[in-house]
Amino acid sequence: SQIGFLTGPILLSSVLALPCLFLGTWLGYRANRRLPRRWFELAMIGVAVAGSLKLLAD
Image 1 (cartoon, rainbow, N blue to C red):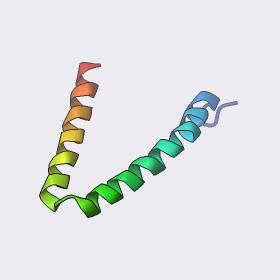
Image 2 (image 1 turned 30 degrees about the horizontal axis):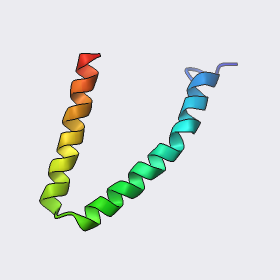
Image 3 (image 1 turned 90 degrees about the horizontal axis):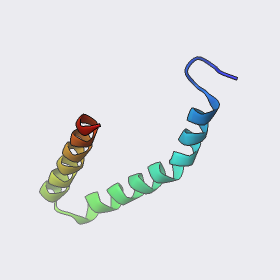
Image 4 (image 1 turned 60 degrees about the vertical axis):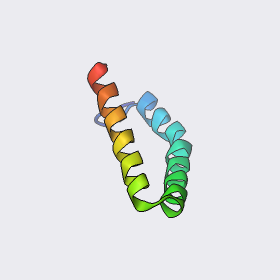
């Protein structure tokens, strides 16, 4: 069944992605506490740029 745009496969993908979400949050928290602030900021900018380029390439 479908509730608006929420279909079974989308719901399943979302549930399966939850462990990655929690792992990424935990890793980001640890990196933020261990790395100098500027290094962390540059790393996050790099991740954002890489994601943007990937979206543009697709």
